Structures are given as structure tokens and as C-alpha cells.
Image 1 (tube, rainbow, N blue to C red):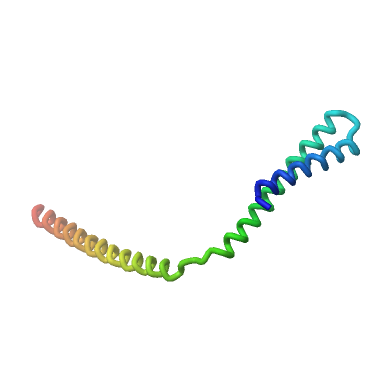
Image 2: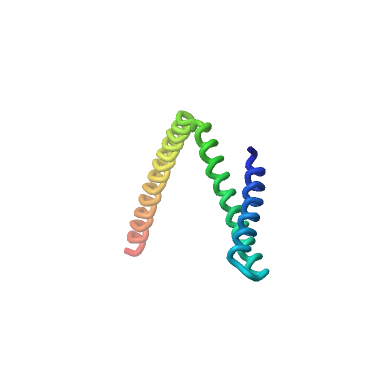
Length: 111
């Protein structure tokens, strides 16, 4: 059965259950409509939850995660991050040396 047909079936079922429950519990038209509406909405939402869980389990079982491809990609990213860290560390060392030389030059100019 298609998911769409399942929703239709449960919605109609909820409508009739709501009408019957509303007739048994309520003596006025407002109560009948309220019970019918609430029970129909409950059945409608419940059918969507059932379909979502069904599709999630069916799709999850048939999908294979490409572990080797992701491991290779992650190894590549780790190597690139290490290269960039070394580059940034060397740039920080150079700027520290330049800043130190600048301070020394300023100290020498004041004397």
C-alpha cells in the first residue's frame, strides 16, 4: 500500500471513529464536531508518524555508508590542517621576531 493511500485510509477511519465517539459522548452539534475533528486530526497525524518511521527503517536498512571514501577524505583534511597549522606557526614566529626587532630598534633610537 502506498503511503498516501495509508494516510487517506487512516484519516477516513479517524473521521468515522470520531463521528461514532461524538454521537456516544455528546448531545449537541458542537461536541459532535469537536470530537470528530480532534479524533480525525489525531488519526491523520498518527498515520504520518507511522509512515515516517516505516520509511526511515526501510531506507536506513538499504543504505550502505561509504566508510573508505570518508576515511580517505578525512585523512586528506587532517594533512591539510597540519600543513596550514605549520604555516601559521611559522608566520607567528616571523611576526614575533619582527616585533622584537622593532622593539629593539625603538629602544636603541631613544638612547
